[in-house]
Length: 275
Ligand SMILES: [Zn+2]
View (spheres, protein in one colour):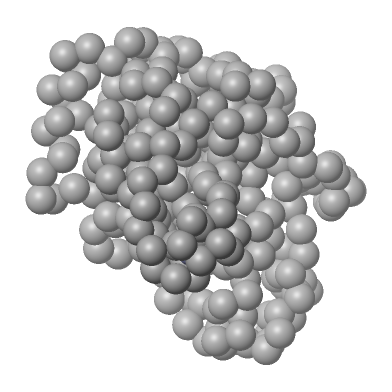
């Protein structure tokens, strides 16, 4: 962490706007060589060439991380300071791995809206009574949370049951947006966003108070106890930047308010009628 980052305030406001208001701009951004955040996103149209390249990844071996990377690689002509078109696939992979997860998912959402439009039909289940119903969501109204600098998205978490990491007791954690690369260390095939939770928790811990900055790898949170296992991901979710992919409404069966996540982690996200 640089001196500048250390001295920056921790609780700056996070801006909120709908996707339509926010426009094609990365929620955090990529630093260019002069240290400025660059946020431009330019996409090409999704044509048969892209359909064939991406369709090849939709088999039984479907892996969400690979698919998102391929979609961003195929569709982006510009990402922040990078002219994506002019880059080799390996170079694009390096750029992606260093990007913020929030920015990558934002581009993925933008690709869906640009290629298929803003409406997506969903089959939802009420979290209270289990009633199933159809719902058409308007992706243009998805709330995008963005920051001026990544430090504005950092916050502190008080560990409820202090636990050991590398022989040291973790009591307070500095949490911030994870990089895309923190997904790469999750073992196995990632098919949905539930699988991503450990990777997101690992990638979100930037510092352990008193022990400085740490880049954690899989297994290093094994001593964390249940209370924190439940609470930390919930807090990370609540304070995360990028697109907030949830739908709110009132259940027609039980009349209770519901909030349900849009299932954008499955292969149907790019079907005109998503399940
Ligand atoms: Zn209900």
